[in-house]
Length: 359
Image 1 (cartoon, one colour):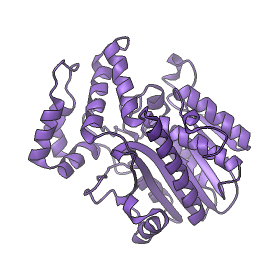
Image 2 (cartoon, rainbow, N blue to C red):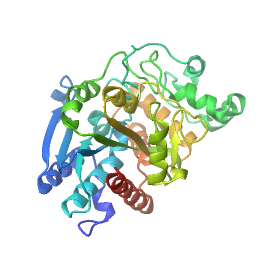
Image 3 (cartoon, rainbow, N blue to C red):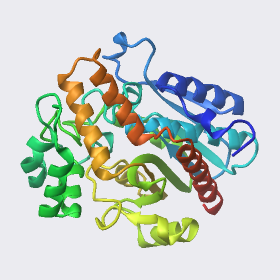
Image 4 (cartoon, rainbow, N blue to C red):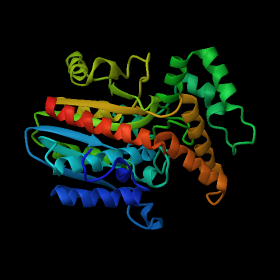
C-alpha cells in the first residue's frame, strides 16, 4: 500500500463517509466524476442523496473497470479498495485507463443490507429473459429460510441447516437456495419483478463509459463467500476458454473458479451482472470476473442474512436486536479484524494492478 494512508484509513464508517471520501479522492486525482441519484422515491426520507458515483481517469484503448457495493453491505470493503486504487493511480502505480463504479447499491450500503430498498439482490436482477419463478428446492425450503416472524431465543439454525446439507448435499442446496428466485418478494436471494433502478442506470450509461475501448477487464468486488481471507476469482457463464486461460496465467490457477462448476466456492447464478454486461458488449473483448474474499462459514453468513431479513420485515428499527442484526451482517461481510482488512485490501489492489498490466 502507499504511504498516503494505512489500510485501516481506507475503510469507511458508513455509506455517506465512503461517498465523501470517494468524491474527494477522485477530485484529488483529477478524475472525471459523476453522481447518479438512485431511489428518487426514497430520497425524501434520507438526509442526503443516495447515489452511484463514477470516477473516470487515465487514457488508453484498454479499460479496467472496478465496481463495488453491488451487494450493499459489501460496499464497506469495495469502497476501501477503490479509495486505495485512487491513491495508487495518483502516485503513478496504475497504468492505462480506469473506471471506478462506487456503490452500485447505495441504499443497501447505507442501510447495511445486502439488497436494495425492494429487497432485490442486484446480482440476480440483470435479466433480459423475464422475471418469475423459483427453483423447486427453494420452494421446499422457503419456510426454513424466510420465517414470517422474529427470531426466537432458541432457533437451532445450525443443527437444522446441517441436517438439510446431509440430506440434500451442499452443492445442490447452494444452487437451490442462492442461485436466484423471483417468487418470494420478502425472501432471501430475491431477484425482483423488473429491472432495478441501479440496473437501469447501468444500462443507460455503460456504453458511454466504455467508449471506444478495445479490451475491458471488469473486476466486481465481493465478500462473504469462501475461506477466511481467501481470494477466489469467479468467472461467469459467458467467459470463453481463452479468457479462463488468461485469468489463470495472470492471477494463478488456484484462485480461478467458474460459476458454472458448482463444485468449489461458487455456484450458478441467474441474472448475474457480469453475464448481462458481456451480452451488452459482445462485439469487444469484455472480460468480467468477481473478486470474492472469504469471511466466515457459509452457515454463519446465511444465518446472519436470515436474521437480518426477519428483523427488517418484522422488527422494530429502534430495538437493540434490530441494530445488532445489522452489526452482525456488517461483520460477516467486512470483519473488524485488522489483519483480515489489511490482507484483503492489499491483495485486491494487487489483483487490479496485475490485471491492468496484463491487459
